[in-house]
Image 1 (tube, rainbow, N blue to C red):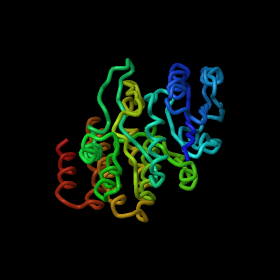
Image 2 (image 1 turned 90 degrees about the vertical axis):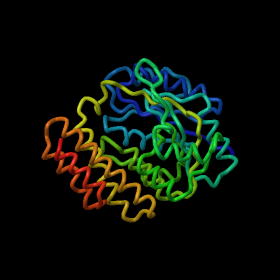
Image 3 (image 1 turned 60 degrees about the vertical axis):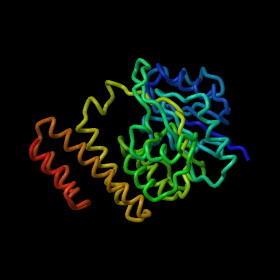
Image 4 (image 1 turned 180 degrees about the horizontal axis):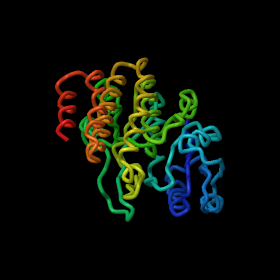
Length: 308
């Protein structure tokens, strides 16, 4: 049976970019079953833009964050598969088709992801995701030039969890599985997508990977992460601490990936603190890695923070 995709677009003060995102869905070579825009309490013309686009269901809520908005869209969806798109990004024309045709051929796939492009505010191509991540390079090597490949080996799973190449707008997930897992976690401002994706991986055995670019992720020079890197990295660690608590019940490769990702998050927080001259805080940030992942690598990280 052909999959029916419900595309959920959370939007907060996104009037300037929302129409482009919506149009990229409307222009798909495999038509979406429906497009749901969730206006997360915007104070600009976001709702008016969405209402003015044909084929869009508008859901309005008080400002509650992106996770609540995505979950609200999923709850209202009537398709059997979910796809997500942030209001400042856009889909490649074949994004839904490449996944839909594969799902129809191989219904045993648990979920699908794929490559995507990084572009700046002016649209300049900055790179692609899979070649920039170890897990992506592993899958490209396994695909050996092919357009798609199945991720199913323990080392592939561990590498994907530790530093995944996919992003929210490349994810295709059965709506029933999304609901069963409880959707995106609320109460977190950073890394909520990793939290959900890791829980999804922990319940999956066969993951479809499309090696072609499925869309564009826009890198904003004035993003919150760049304006306040220390706060962003603290929030990243806080989210991963919650994920680590859950990971005790995950399969071994997923647990291993979570430990690696946590170590990277603590290192990034230490670097951000060190750049602000907070050397003692930087050391404190990475010390837990010695307990979670004892060895020379963790010790070297602590020493690097001591040296500033």
